Each structure stands twice: as structure tokens, then as C-alpha cells.
Length: 159
Image (tube, rainbow, N blue to C red):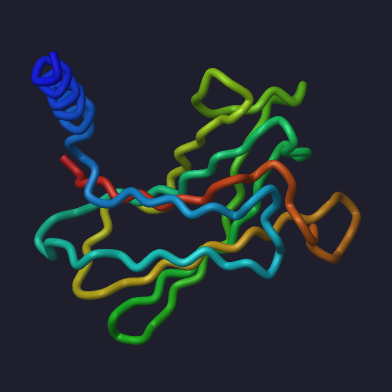
């Protein structure tokens, strides 16, 4: 019986990982129950094949406590030559009626947000992600962004 269960688990693991052939890097970091405006989530990327192109994504897990329609992010990519490219990005996170976008069957949704396409890497890179959400008509940023639980970064090999 034990060998049969082990075989089933091994088969399930193989099927799970074989369905995601494009994935090169996929990592999440928890921000707790709220993402503080000064909290920067950092990912140290692996050294990748410099002859291939990749698509990059920011992954967000959020729940029904997320009070906004959009999400503003500041994403910085540190390159091996010391140069840092900074992008300010806006993503729609909910329908006008407040229904969260993304995948998931419970109140936790996962959103795979495009960041860059056709990127070539040469060396060691770091990615830093910070939330930059503000309430309408207010200049200071939201101190603690409720409803975001995890921030991730994903790299997929381009076909």
C-alpha cells in the first residue's frame, strides 16, 4: 500500500511540474496582512542563458480586503553593469463592481501581470518591487496596503 501511494504522489508531482514548461524562475514573498509603503520586495534572479529571450511577470496574491480597483507598482531592475532601470506600472485588479480579477476559487486571487517581453539577460540581476498606491485626491501613499498577501516574480522562456 505504501509503495502504491508513493507512486501516485510521484506521478502527481511529475504531472504538476511538466505542465509549466516555460517557467524558468517563479518565487513569492509574503508581505503579511498588509504591504507597507516602505517595504521593498527583492528577488535575486538566477543566471540565465544569454542567447534566449524571456518574458517577465509580477505575480500578486490578494484577497477581498483589497480596497482599490488598481495597483500601482515601482519595479526596479538592477543590471550587472550597475545600471538600474525603474518602471512605474499600473494594473487593474478589480472589476468596477469590486470583484477581484485573477485566478482562484476562494477569496484569494492570483494575478499574473505582464512586466517585460523579449528580455535577454547577461549576468546577475536583481528585481525590487514596491507598492505606490495613493488614495484619490491625496498625495501621501497608502501607509499599509490591505489585501495584498504575497508578491512574486516570474520568468518564462519565450518560445
